[in-house]
Image (cartoon, rainbow, N blue to C red; front, side):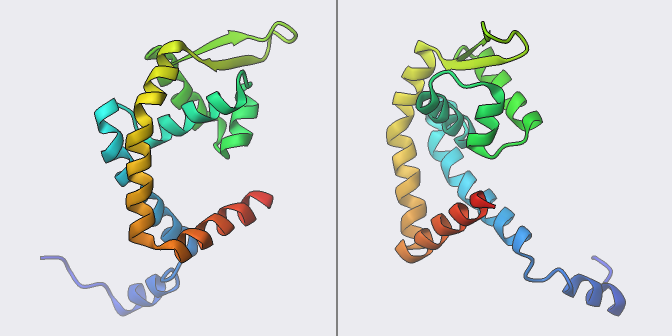
Length: 150
């Protein structure tokens, strides 16, 4: 049986009640779990499908361009890209104009797995949208847009 927290610890903890960062992280984990569950059939996580989708959109981006487009720190991005390259879903090549820059692109296998993921992605999108409702979904999109603008 856990020991009850002291009064001082409870007061300290109250400072963090309603923390926006915690609420957003919790919502992210809950939404991600829906996408991950739906995408399990194509052996991908939501973050991987999103990365493949960004590669499809951008064509042949550098790691820096991908980081900016996905609002992802470089170490997390590197890990995710490495997994996609290892699975043969993306490829990496040195930039001809600047050998310090590496560019990424979808492979044919990546394009096919992304196509196979579409119905599962759409099902996850519908599930989350239905659970949240149109108003909350609109607020979330506005939130993301506002935060992206800085």
